[in-house]
Amino acid sequence: MPVRLLTSLLAVFALLAIAGCGSGGDSEGAAPPTTPPPSGKAEDFPTPAAGETLAELQGDLPQGPILQPSVSLLEKGENRVAFAIYDLARSQLSGAEVVLYTARPDGTGVRGPYVARSESLKVESAFASRTTLDDPDSAKSVYIADVPFKRNGSVSVIALVRLDRRLMRTDPAVMTVGSKGATPPGPGERAIAIDTDTLASAGGDERSIDTRLPPAPELHRVNFRDVLGKKPVVLQFATPQLCQSRVCGPVVDVALQAKARAGSGVAFVHQEVFRENKVEKGVRPQLAAWKLATEPWTFVIDRRGVVRSRFEGPMSPGELERAVAAVR
Image 1 (cartoon, rainbow, N blue to C red):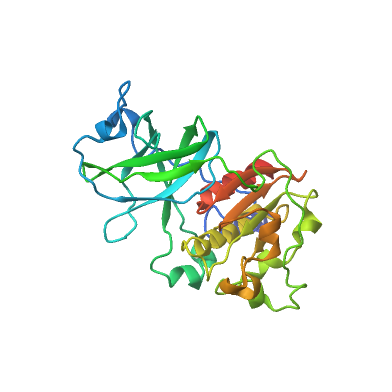
Image 2 (cartoon, helix red, strand yellow):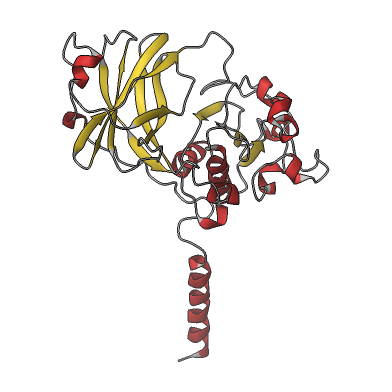
């Protein structure tokens, strides 16, 4: 074989080897995962008849799993309603067909079914924290349904769950649509400029500004105010070690993986929740500035400083990566 041809082939093989290094799909700028399919079909669940109450819709269906909403802020119009389904032993269920129904507190005005999809919170091992791996109760997946609400006020939400071909119901969860107080900026609204804790502001003491184990210094290199309006930003408020919902650890892992895949064109900023990382000290001023009463929250902001996506509670790697791709 001529030397020139051999050299050319070796160069091609070298390029292919470089391209194949690492796990598939996690190169910078790669297309985000597609949205998972619905967990079931609406026609396979009861359709409310005119004037039918929630109790009548449920009929004699056995009470089974527990519905645990992961969101507290609902508004008129369509909402991303994230939730978990637990069995009576408080183990999280996945793989079930799940739909939601809404009704007034007295059980009238039933609407639905709204079919949920299931999204895994699992990340690649390189991005999984000890905080998450060592916690058997940390969130593993999340159900998400797009649910419209017509009016403000209290609303009852139930789930019908089909598992192993058996249809069961949950007790209603009472939720509130609309807020009387201030709320964090939503899609289409300007992000609030704040100074976030960074490695520089903490004098290099990463554990003072990050309860994740191990800390993720990649998420504390830039001050939010310095990048706002200059490039797309993911701003996350979460406390992996002190989170009451056991969701913060997984969502910070999700952000770390999304950062690796997004590349340098998108800034990622994590802000801890409690002063001195002590619950009794109260929340840090950054949360008050963003009008946050719960955690975790994740915001995806475009290069003009406008919020494009907002996630309360858990969000999957696919959800965040799709939101980032939309502003990149």
